[in-house]
Length: 267
Image (spheres, rainbow, N blue to C red):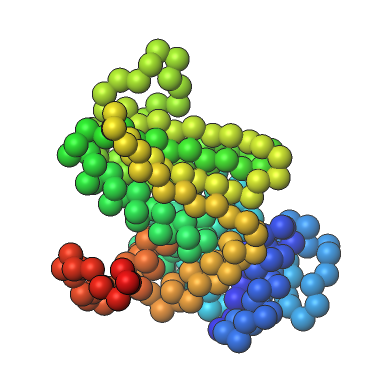
């Protein structure tokens, strides 16, 4: 399938381009970037969306939230699905994304790694379960020193997913006066060259359950973005997340555990 990469000359855009070239499924035919004076061999490269006549099957966006309006106008005009990996959208940007999703399939994913999708689902399920027992919930994230937005888009996505099943919780970012009931903490750190870490913890006075996702190689985001594009390209209009991929991949019925232990493992 033909792929358009928005932000192709940025750090993530370059990784998506390299991974796409190694894939049998994708051919990059359009690249959009404000630094388009650079050359990318074999593709149509432009610094703006207006005037592009090449047709792609799907767009992967790792540019800037400042290009949201132009990106969506281009995608809707060409009826092209969009995977948005860019973060930092304003409320107006998000409203535009929701409106555009009525016409085309859009996946809004601040973290395109498959592991983050699992963490999101596990955190949501955990919150739904542990809220019945008054467990405290904490979300923490750590990224490299140059990351601009805090909390990270992924941390906010996890928070919103938890609030969807536990709406009585109140998010806080400071514990100067101690912790009160029904509060969920969300904390950020910016250290060195850490690619990305997210952890969700559920705690009572007697135990702590923590789920942690750690990215060791930035390439995992590019590979995940291509998986998102594969998923999205044949979907009907709507707003999707990586959780929808997770649900699809886990839709087969599973055999329930009956509590018995395989005796061969205890010998």
